[in-house]
Image (cartoon, rainbow, N blue to C red; front, side, top):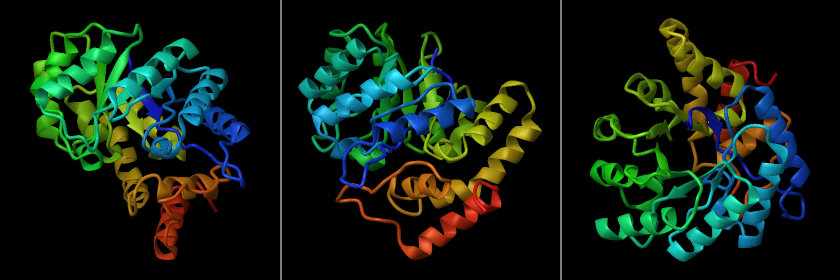
Length: 291
């Protein structure tokens, strides 16, 4: 079962714009010390779209090597063949599951969406989590399509970042007979999604505040809703600050500010604006994550 708090890892870069292998190790160790349930390399937050295939594979290898918690490797693409190759690589490298984004830019019809995921799922022996994020891909995976895919034995869940609790409720309703997990893809909706049957979150904010996010989820699970709500509200300003600009621009700056390896962003992403950096620093300071 894929559950709990799984940070969507940043990819730290060295000064000469290479993947920072040691920096990735430090970040993973920090997150494991914070109590996370797993880690997710090579997603949107990891700037996967700017990684070469070779870099993508190396980051997955490094994450598997350094992590003592499950690794859910981002292996998605708008090219089904490429996504399949990356998913096979992740399987062979020892990843515990693969995260596959809906095909962006191409905007396939419903049948194309089904065939994309089925083609990959039927060719590999690794658990697959679908990733639905319409704001980044330009296409929304309908609940009915999700339910159809949930019938495949190795499609075990979805990271839902549609922002619609109605849609997420419908997914949970339609998949209640399946061994299928719904994970929040929006930090601000983690607690509401847990309350309707979600099992965890693939989190951006957990890169800098793992203990707080883990504490919120654990409080919910133990039935301490008062504590869960208090943490949810306390995290809200930081969550807003993390999305003042396109992810992962703020979170990479936040990781740097708390003293962990981050490095530059890769173009076309550019550094956070001075005004937004001030807001980010205040949110981190208010939670005593920096001084």
